[in-house]
Image: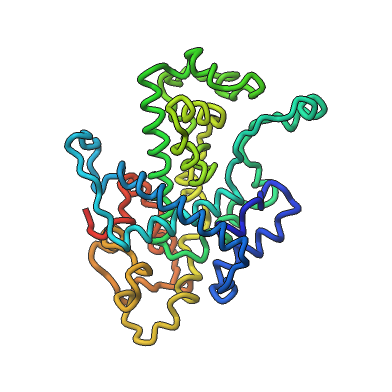
Length: 343
């Protein structure tokens, strides 16, 4: 889906029907084409190589426990990531790329002078306005309705991994100068419109803190992060970040908190109804199972029986609280849904 969704921006109403068709393919596994055309196959190969490189970078800076403070670099050993853990992260990266292709932000490009003069709208630097064509609940149903709840948690955990990679680069920048410094502004071209934070600063803002830009940068997609990381100098990385830094308070955490659906439902019917032995998730391949961290948090034990297959029809008066087995945002901070062993 990360290939087919490229260029299908949800802020453009003409794309809506095509977006629905593409996103529905991941809801119904039988509709996913078994073969790609040569062009898509090449694009998929390049995307896989990009994600493999990015995965190695993300894991080199990730932590596998609830520890509040990162281990000093000289004491931290690189994570030894299992094949299943890698598969979870790669799956979430693909889904995050699809989400950002459709509902995410767009990379800044320098407008042509004559075009900019003829239409000021082309020079605007804003976040996506997809909500004009999709409600948040439509978006959720299309993107996340077919996922198992632990896969939503994988998505959230990888969102945080990507966000933290940007934070790491901004922390490096903060050692040199704060947001209010002329050196930060000089990184952005003169044609770049002022950021809303610069026009309407808040007295509560910390001038040394670049975290106001993290959410927007995540919405540019994993491939943009790899583009930043692959720049050949620190200054080039900083300039690319500065050109795409827009303050944004909205995050995937906020989305999870406001969606109506108590839990993704179709997965229990469409993905697992053909389990011939009906012995729970232990009969499924490891990549299709929730990890120990998810099971421990939501059930307090290593469940794999019928209760994990609860369907929407079982929702009672307090069903929302019982079946909403996703949205453990605090656990995303250390990737609780990604790692094999509970920490």
